[in-house]
Image 1: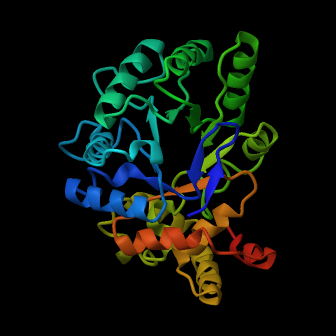
Image 2: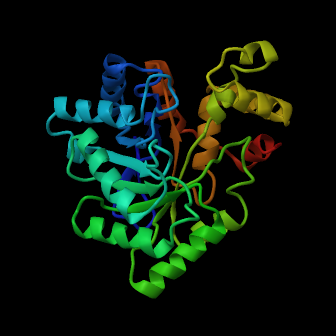
Length: 314
């Protein structure tokens, strides 16, 4: 798989980033190891996770995904410098452990490093904006962690353009590190958050962009067409929303282009993201080897301007 430079960072990442939220949720340890082995073998060497994954699962407390990735790294000596690990801090981990205060980030990064069984994190994200903590405090502790070599680059997830702009002003005024990467929600059926001012900000400031919910919780694979299809789905509320808001028209367009390209609908949805200005790489998950191979194929699909016009009906 081809690699891409991530904004102003020195990171060379795979053109599709594997979403590690499935580890410890829909994949157990054995299945997770098999998937990580397959990712590595296919050149899909960038893994995205977070401390909070998968706290939403009954019986889990968070950190499960990081732990499984760490166990895999420990069982495969020599692979650490060949993979890029993204993780995040800021979501609620219980017992008041949330947000972007210097105290909590200091504790959280050590927890993540321990679970990942590594001494550095390639890219560390603020998982969401924290209105209770000044940018100066958050960026100040990131500076220390960068200087100590515990993290190698920083990014922001779920920030809007005003929040990114304010953070950059603080960085410039105080000689603090700036966010070099953004992780927004973005897909063919969720375009409004990123397109417009936030997209322009990233392009103008050479901010790397890795998108999440790139397949809209599986909706863009085409497996959800009716209310009956949605019943029992892990993200029933999410995919149900897309169905009600014009998403079925997008599925028709995806089906048309997929047929022309001899590809799956999911492959076309990922390819569309790779053709979007400002997007470095989409994040996508898989629970089967066939799905993983589909992600790899998507990186090589070429879309014409006419194809893109057909797809952008939402």
